[in-house]
Image (tube, rainbow, N blue to C red; front, side, top):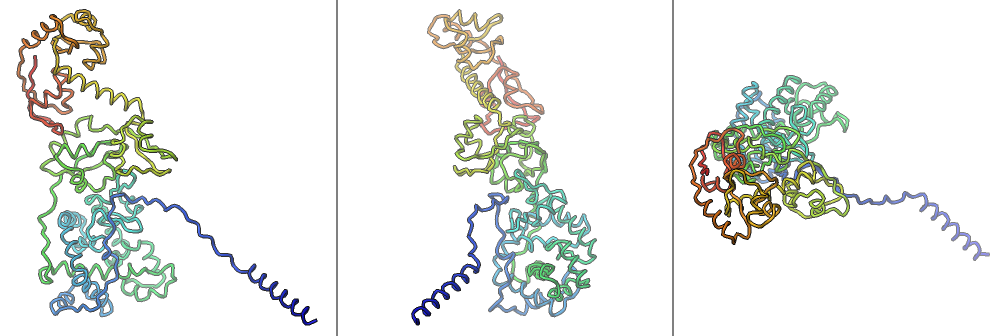
Length: 534
């Protein structure tokens, strides 16, 4: 009997345990997904850690000189209370001690842009202290992107940038244009001050957003930034200011005090004479920016340092953009832009990569060289992932691109033929009559001379293959007797070496040789070229 009772008890315990296990929450399965593809460019630079870091001042104490600077009056507004001064002191201590080298690097990085920023802020009637705001935002880094996607030295979010006319897409990100973004930041700050009537609140709104600060003020009944930070805990979790926003103004004040006392604090003074002298130039859509850089004797890195807003080595095909060219190289680069050949990518197709696609397969499909595809898409890797987009130049038309390549090959053949030319075309000559005379065919003559039509011009040089006959040797002698005449041609707007060569019946190679132009050498309107015509 006891055995049966024990057995029943065991069964009952097992049933209860089973029910408990069944009622327990099932563990959530971990689903591994592909990482979300960021829209941040591949050449993006992350913010320096010190931009967002909590100031660590352990073991560091201010000297008497530093304390005197800290206690000095701040330019923007009025004196701060003791509680507020404590936060300012933490950041002041941090950037003069533990983060001193970072601060020195930021100061050096700011020198090419500070004069322009000051000029723009003066135009809008803004306090001069505000030219220091990019130190707080990005360390004056025009290429910087935050984890949240804010970009440029003013750290505009895409939406805010768009409100102030800054374009941001696959081709270009004008938040990284130091000139356009500065103008946009000045207008934005002016709007915020008009909304709040207080610079501290305007700065807080620049960081957190106008709506966030407006709601917090309304809920707390405050009209002062520091009063708002004291009452921050009274707000709901969703409405509270983040720590970054609470510390934003004190950090800005601390950096401003340091900047206004660089000599006293032992920092290298900032030079206001290092502004870049640039010529803003309209760049037509689809311009080959790498070729533009080379026309001014610049590498892509040097050009991109002046124009960090471009995300590709081709300008956006659907719109004109502004490029900033060094003034001492602008003439040649502007001359290049006047050449229609500078825009080989004015039409394009976005190819969506499918499973099994490779650079070689896309190249074969569109008849565009792999090197061109990689250059246009700023890619070095051979790896492609399904879902990616690859930009294909020339409207993606294999016929157009193939025709362009064919034309290029024909031009090379014509140049070689003209150099080896052993027969001078006379009035009344045709390809058929010349072929009959030298015992060859019209198609052979066309191939040998890179001709796409049968039209000939008196004085034109032709290369006759298999020129072993007496008549061919005589033709070579006749060609040598034709006298050359020197013409000094003045380059006109829209001219290029190819059009000039066709005009005088010479080759581009000859023009380069006569005028000591290398392959990268460009011509510009008003230049005099030597041309020897026969």
